[in-house]
Length: 160
Image (spheres, rainbow, N blue to C red):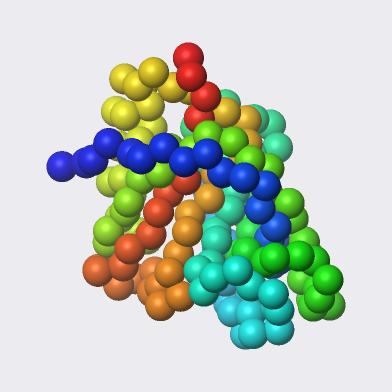
């Protein structure tokens, strides 16, 4: 049984991390995180212990349905400011806006929450996708294959 989301008004958020261009059919998420995790301790001024996995769809939300469409994926952490940027990393300012936030429990390979969001909840809701970043908030101890893993899916929305 899937729950209704909570709604959050995100304020501008500063991120530091690394990114790769990929598609869902040529998914390089594990490589991205393998590159990021050994360097994570070099990021200073973190605001919390969480990690963020962010997706940017350059051609807008319509491309989400196309598994071959290019997207930019980030492995990042939230920081107070950009005063200490490690050489191997980039900065990104995540703009604010309204997000529908869904809890997901289970391994990252379990797509049931994503399927629910896009095939059931969104079409029946009073919201449409907004053309902004999508991201997942992962706790410090997150393990992608753990059947007890927990993460939050932040979906950018606006009223219909």
